Length: 286
Image (cartoon, rainbow, N blue to C red):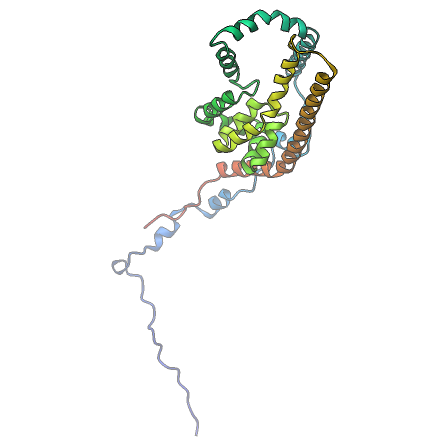
């Protein structure tokens, strides 16, 4: 006796044919987006480094034009000449300004005049006066942020320093304050990359000892101060400590910038890639 096995009837019937009156889905709209070739073009690879980025990444110094060399060497020569003349005729300069100094000392509001002058010349803060630094910080923060972003994208050195500050800590900001980076340049970077004011202010206060050096040297150059061996020793020690701390801070910040260079270059390349790509929203809504 043979047994015949029969398959059970399917639980679900055959799928119904498409009926537009019974469905809101229209298969014809699936192909309304860009073609596959267009989608492939939107997924581009990361752009290669530009010549300037390549040079920065490999530590290659770009050759300056003749005009740039003349400006650079001319400015350096003028600064050196002024420094030499000031060193030679320091006593004569102090004596020549003695009447004005006495007038400021005797005048009731005399002390406010040099303070006002220092605040004015602290735009940018040539002498690093604290009030000038604060005013300079807020000026760049609220009036120059857009321009600074454009300059950051254009200037490699500024952009790299901004990248280091943006991804660094309070100690990075303090090191920059002690380094050879010009204070007005550093303040502009701090203000435009989003550094909080209290962090900037704390770093500015802690870096004030670097501003005491010229003040102390000016005090020692007064005719009323005795030019004895003790004063010379203290002056030399103060100058030595200031120079050593500045050089040390410069070395540290240069190392941090060198370490951060690959990430900085890669971020610039990805930014160019993002600007060149088209969004992949290729499916239109029904």
